[in-house]
Image (cartoon, rainbow, N blue to C red; front, side):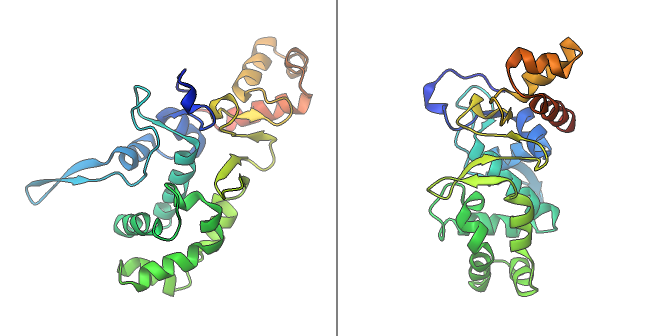
Length: 232
């Protein structure tokens, strides 16, 4: 994890590109482009593609880093891309959806979970993006994608923002920006999964690791499985 002593980042989570890639399984090169933009050549001219995610940190901590909110947002955009949505349509949606949802990270809000299809339809009917319009008019199942994948295991706070994320339903492991700077922790005991997995390896016993950190044996087993599944 990115190391940072500034108290203003407490409660937001703090992730390096490597952390973000490991937890979301999105290539870090793609995440970097979305957070910083990139330059490219077009018919002999150098063009600039602006950032698509309104990152909270950027390079304020000395290197490119993400908050928990950024992490949730890039998951949504990546799902769009993997389902064949064009860059143009993604950019149009990212630029316009903020008009409907008052948030710097609108895609990851509970409001988008419930109203996302309607919002995208309204954007499309304004004439912004033929492909986006086609997707909506052809009954593209945004609700299915959002509910079953993007928001599975996500809990929201009173402001409809993601509060914590359980990446694997079968494992009692959560990512909570209010604890351990957002590092994955076990629900039973709030110990970082990486710490428990390393202890189990060093002791050559999950039971010994459980006694050492005073957590249930299942918590160590879940931590080990999580770390194996999300190995860098």
